[in-house]
Image (cartoon, rainbow, N blue to C red):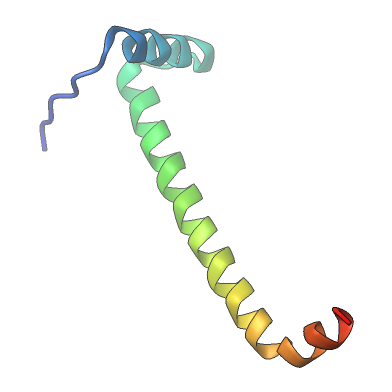
Length: 67
């Protein structure tokens, strides 16, 4: 799917610097940034889910340790 990406001059500068530092095109740098952000978001959601489960499972123990 084709898409137009409109960037501010500052964002354009940052994208160009990122692409240059990674030795890739701006297109590839954009794709990598999107994929990295999606992976990070998924990881953070999974950590939050597992943390909530652990807090629920060990609530009594955590309460005793907190005293």
